[in-house]
Length: 175
Image (cartoon, rainbow, N blue to C red; front, side, top):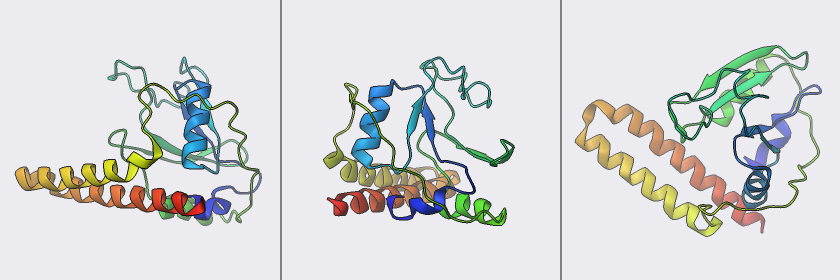
């Protein structure tokens, strides 16, 4: 993601993530992954999560359903993709195609100022991400062999893990 962040903004719009995590935990995630956009905190889900209808009412932690929303510069929602679960995200090219199809030219935004990073007690160290994603990939492949009806979901998930591994390597190579 860090390689193409200049394409993630368009015509006066910005890219931001929103979570229920505390500000310090979001700052730690921006810092660890060198995200080219800020992660905003909506602790009580009242500012962005509930108003956009992405609160996961099934989850006892009161988190949001992982959802990507493209909002036009005039504030109109023009595209949305809710993920199957917390690990699924749309491919960058899918989101960028939505932006390009609107005729919005690539622009840049200032890098986020994450504030004071305060990783949570369960935060995974950066050095553990690649083995974690590899394990998740191979677990999905194993499950697809046990449950052939899940083969397509497992293939998609394994491809997502490959993209995550590539992103971790890209961030590591920046240092």
